[in-house]
Length: 213
Image (spheres, helix red, strand yellow):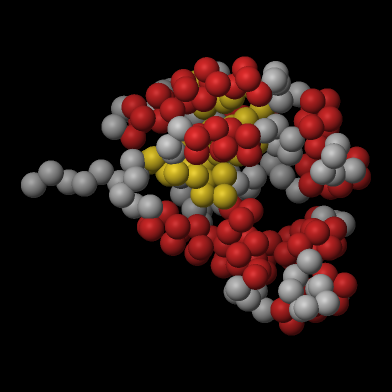
């Protein structure tokens, strides 16, 4: 009897502003299943998997909208004020988020490749194990400029400080994508990445050193 091969679970990550969300979008356009951890986190909050009383106790009543739902921007503002507040939010949300990720992986169990788009996927290794880590990179000056519309300088610094640094992400990588140029330059790199993932999903062993695209 031929044993069914499990999906190749890929962790897609990168420093703030590096462009992992763009890479995720381009992978989806090529038929790859991508699970967005941010979207799952939003769902976890909306569905009440994290008790509102616990959130209010930790971050105050200002994180809620008039209708009682969580204002994610206000919550993020409070959570990124310090390492302790970020850790407190993670302690409240991450267990439910990890379970949601595991459920999503199971739902897509017939796929050959599943990509998890998550800034903290390397840090979550013990809870959401992945077979391949893809890291998207870009110089800090470019990342700051890309993030300027969405985040102010202080917010950029706070969010960057709560993630593994670039060297640590690179050390965990199996594939590294240089996204320092315009989006149109990503096309050939995404095609190469899809080829690499397809071969790994078919059973090819991981290379001894990261592949740089």
